[in-house]
Image 1 (cartoon, rainbow over the protein chains, first blue to last red):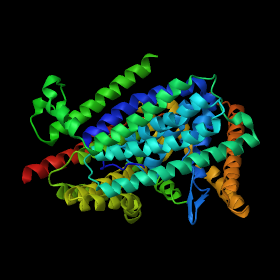
Image 2 (cartoon, helix red, strand yellow; image 1 turned 60 degrees about the vertical axis):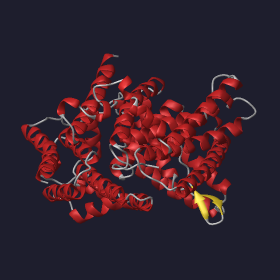
Image 3 (tube, chains in turn purple, orange; image 1 turned 90 degrees about the vertical axis):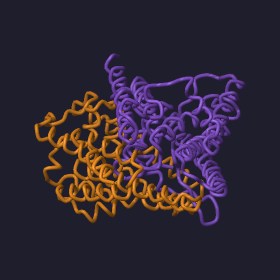
Length: 289
Length: 233
């Protein structure tokens, strides 16, 4: 699920990097507020734990085994913001040291796994963590975190123009569903074992929340994830929108700087200028507070 | 463990090792962007970039064969996708996937194998990334080996209890609790040594004239190379 460099088209990786940079900055700030600097060792060691936990095999059927992915487990124990920071650190170290995932694709991988995956995984627990359906919520959270990250990664690849025959797409969706169920089961098993050792390892959502609101939020996550996948495998709607672009025009439309003529150079320049702008904005926001 | 080798390479000495991390990170981004946006004459351009990276690695006195083999870690994943794309009737894109992902990994390795990770992360921080996130990354990398060793014991423990799902869940929970406790002990030890939430490097980083020269040269090389190739044909 770690997308290497060279797979995503320029509009996709540039847009996702631009979205991920401020999101990571915001989440890091939020985590820093709850976990002051003195807790940095805890988050680092828990990141190492998620890495190392992959060595422990869970039997899931004759001759096959799965391992923990960890986004939901971290969200239940450290809270969602800290879990996002830890997973962002993991994805970064994997890209730099293990050549697992690209640098330009880092924004995409961070959004898929560390931000949206963790949020989707925390959502059921946030709403139903105090009800009788708590166990189901923990299971669903684990499953949803893996499913969301995997489907988003697949959609991004399809948006980038990587063609996949229908059967391949079906098989990969089936595999995602199986690994999502495995992650749900492992998360639930690990949380129960942890509670047996020391119950206060697990954060409890502060109050009972509305069932209807939770259902709407869950439906929204499923709808968006499914919708993005549908849109990416049949991008006609997007193309139609593109042809109607005369309605709204931006200086970098088509990822070109028109003043520089056509060809690759304006594209690359537009990409770099866009990255520079986002970088500048983040730097200014970061300095001000 | 296999990435210890990266630590050995990054602690050697060469002109490239001595450059400021920022002077290597910015050209890396330029290299990756120029490669990612190229379409025309990709095979010729890739061959030139490959030669450029090989010369850089030889100049940095890291074992060329070792780095080339390590970058091949991306190939199994890439080749599967390239095959799928080929079958779907787009062989050119399939080949582009392999070339771009391999060269990108090689470029990242050229930087990572000549910069110790703490120095590299410090460079990322100086370029504006959140300090909190990078401190977490530093700790993660530092304790990766410690916790991994513990995980191997836990794996053995789970296997000797029959390797059932319950045994594995128990092992995972114990690993979690031990890591948590260890983090607390590390924190107390650091407080006892006067830690106030920030690392102080022994030497303040200086951006020398050589760093500026390298930055300009290394950032423009892939751009000029691409302009030259596309003009020629």
